[in-house]
Structure formats: C-alpha cells, structure tokens
Length: 376
Image (cartoon, rainbow, N blue to C red; front, side):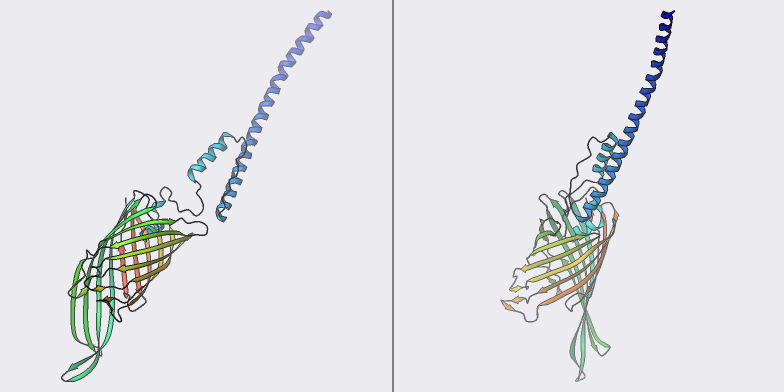
C-alpha cells in the first residue's frame, strides 16, 4: 500500500514538472523579445540625437566625430550606412562638386564668370551674342551762307559682337580657355543746329577680333576665413582686324593680361571680386596704354535651376603712345553696372542673359548679352 502511494506521488511530481517548465521557458522568451525591442528603441533615440548634433555642428562649422553606440542592432547599422551614402561629410569651406551639383545654375554661372573652374575632362562651349549702344555729343561751329552757327555733332555707335568661348578642365585644378570674337560696328554722325539736323553720314565695318588663349589655376581653396582664389593668364594674339573704314574693331594688338578672382560664400549668396592688369605690345609705332580693371558683385541662388547676379565693373586705361610720345587726352575711365540671370534649360545647357548700364562717358550707354553655354 505504501509502495503504491509512493508511485502515485512520483507520477504527480513528474506531471507538475512538465507543466511548469514550458511556462518558464515561454516567460524567458517574452523577456528576450522585450529586451530586443527596448534595445532597438534605444538605438533609434541615439541616432536621432546624433543627427541633431551633426546638424548643429554643420551650422557653426565644427567638425566633430562622435563614437558610435556600442553593439548597435542590425537595423541601426543599416540605417547609419544608408545615411553615409546619401549625405557624405566634406571638410568645411572646401568647394566640392557632388553628383548632379554641377548642373546647378549658381555653380554654372560662377564657372562662366571665371570664379570657379571645370572638373578635369569636362568641356564647356559657350556661344555669346552682345549688342552695345553708345551716344556722344560734341559742340561745333557751322557756317552757312557766310553765317556762323553754333551747333553740335552727335556720334551714335551701334556694335554687335559674336564670341565663341571654349573651356576645358585640366588636372591639378587648372583650366584651358580659348576664344574667338567677331565684331560689326556702325557709326552715324549727325550735325545739328538747335534741334534741326543739317547733315548725316554713316560708316560701318566688321571683322574677326584677336584669338585669345588662356590658362587658369585655382590658387587657394575656400575655408572658414579665406576665399577661393583663381589666377588667370591670357594672351590675345594680333590675328584680328584693327579697323575698317576708319572704325576701330578692337583687334590687331598683342595683349597680355593677368587676373585674380576671389569668391566667398554666404549661402544662398556668393560674393565675387576680381582684379586684372593688361599690357599691350607696340604695333606700327602705336601702343595702347596699360589697363587696370576691377569688379565686385554678388550671385544669389533663387533655386537650384535659377540664379541672379549684380556686378559693378570699372577700368582705367592710361594714355596711349605714338612714336614714343603720349597722346594727350587718350586715357579712358570706364564704369558700368550689370544685372543678369541664368537658368537651366536642360541637363548641360544654361541660358544666360544680362543687361549693363554705363556710368561714365567712356562706357557704353547700354549693353545686352545673351549666351548659351553647353557642357559635355
């Protein structure tokens, strides 16, 4: 009897053990799942905090590397890798061209102005057409029927210029530049007594200008305090036409020009400034005076596809010489203000238009320029 009771008691203990153990294992599995869920929530919070810290550091220009959390979950690692692919970090202030960024209108406009250079192997061809109008008035004395009249002579000059520029990006942050202009000029002379025109004559001339060859090099990269600086040397050959029918066409002299162009960014604005010096070689006893030029302006990105600019340019040309003697009164002071804009028409194609206004007597009264740079 006692033996039978012991057998029943052992059977009950075995059944109780088999019932309790699965419940304990299930409880342990629930705890593990809960811990994994909490770890994933922790990793998500840490990644969000890292994103906020990196955003604040980029705003103040501080580069700080934060160690990754220990033993992140696979989901957190995958998210971090995808973030690195989308937004790679670059040193502050360095001019970098991300994939697709070269198509932005602001970058294209700065390249066209010579403030930025093309990447190695990139070719850009820019056909350009410009029109200029200049009006001058000179007091004169006229005689008619033995009578003397006070009047004036109006000189109205219209010029149309076509230019083809080619730019090729080279290694070592350099760029080759070639250009060939063609110019057509028409001048009308009108003699007036009071408001009455007494005589009118006109002349016109056309021809190719000097072939120009230049080399540009990035001298400094933009940082937190210094600008991006581009140096440029250009040689204008004397292959162009000097004059026709007494009208100067702008060619026929060898000219050497050196320039520096600096830019400084303050998104969405870019400030641009330049300084250049031009020296001409004497031809047939005539030597144009040296020219010092400067310009300053700002480029504003209205959108990734459109930008506008405001530029003021000035130049002073010293007196020219003939047979070694200075020609009194031949020096010129040119000052103008330009407003322009650029927009992307298609990948690789930029439309540029600008309007200029002369601020001195030696400058053109009005100019309008249209160009269509193509990038390959």
